[in-house]
Length: 300
Image 1 (tube, rainbow, N blue to C red):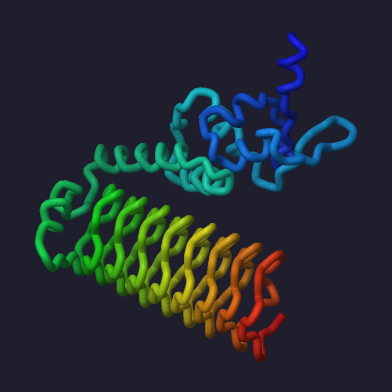
Image 2: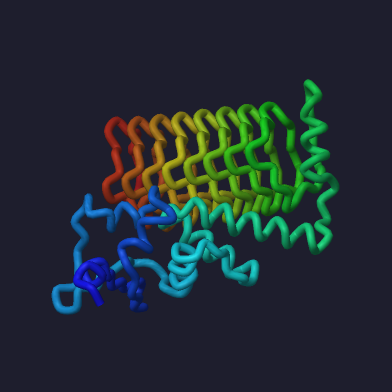
């Protein structure tokens, strides 16, 4: 083996599981990912002094699939539950190509299984030519509605389980009391949307624009808002248990009565946020900005 090959060898310890790979594998296919940034040479990476392993505190169960994706660009064949776990890992490592690939596979699988959705993507595209569009109470579960202009559409009371809204324009759309468990809103525009009483358990909203969105009383358990824009969002009485808001911008957001047990707010911007009487005891706030936040009576 050449010296150059040896120098590019990377030893990884992912939650206790050991992996060997190369710098080229980690940086070539997804150059904007966290892994590419870590091993691009621009940052100092801490290694185990004895054997040179780089430790990452994540579940190592699915990391072999991530490496195979980076090597070959092939999405593995898994169960729906395993795909759900893998997409969480892909989100953490910021592997956007893998996330989209998994979603594409899941959507194709749903189509092959004769999805119970009452409309198709083509039907939706035809409908949105109209001035006022309503899908109130309609079952759209499993549809791929990515990159569509769905602004001002009324989805209230609809079943939107596992719908793919990635990069869609949903500004001022209404999602009151919808069931959108497991849906993907990655990088979607959701400014001034209404999600009051909605079930978004396990939904992916990383990078979404939710400025001034109304999420009062919404179920946001285990949702991912990594890097999302939640400035001036209304989150009163929302359940954010186990939610991931790392790096999210919550400046001026209202979190009165919100449940934040085990929520990840590391590096989040909470400047001027309303957190009066909120229980923050089990909330992860390392590196969060709290300047000007109203913390009167908050439990810490």
